[in-house]
Length: 189
Image (cartoon, rainbow, N blue to C red; front, side):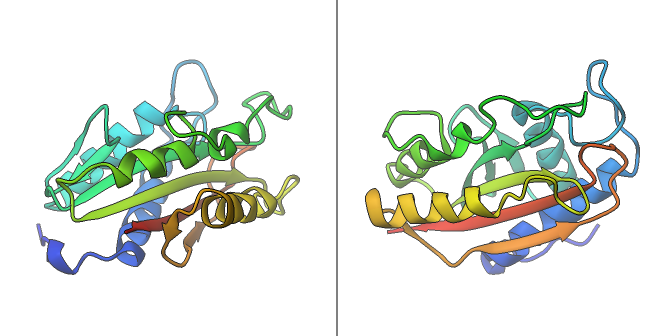
């Protein structure tokens, strides 16, 4: 087992590690509850737990928590959200975008998570990660949602984010979640 130097683990490497893990985990055809095989139907707590186990198997000390969702080596505090426009049944999900855009501190949206991370003083690095699922080609693009999140975070809530880092992995096994987009920002300041 080769452990990457955690001090040098930047947001780009973090997003890449998570995307690689999700693709690898998906290839095992995991089943969550009674849904079709694949990583797409997993809920946020379940997939974050799997990501933490996957990173731990690579030599990182990663743990899940109530706040933050996951930590790595007491260096990174990470909050996750899932963006999944379609359900297991192939129908458009209801209210699937609100998990990112509700612009109030204390809310469970990704914007609220940014505020929560800013208040954590015991982690030098903080990140928010979106795990987004799309068809190939996308029936509903995640781009307007991601762009809206960035605009609201920066222009409305004065949250300082790093540049967006994105990794895409294709050919997932679930028919409604064929592509996973892992999108991350470091929360600065």
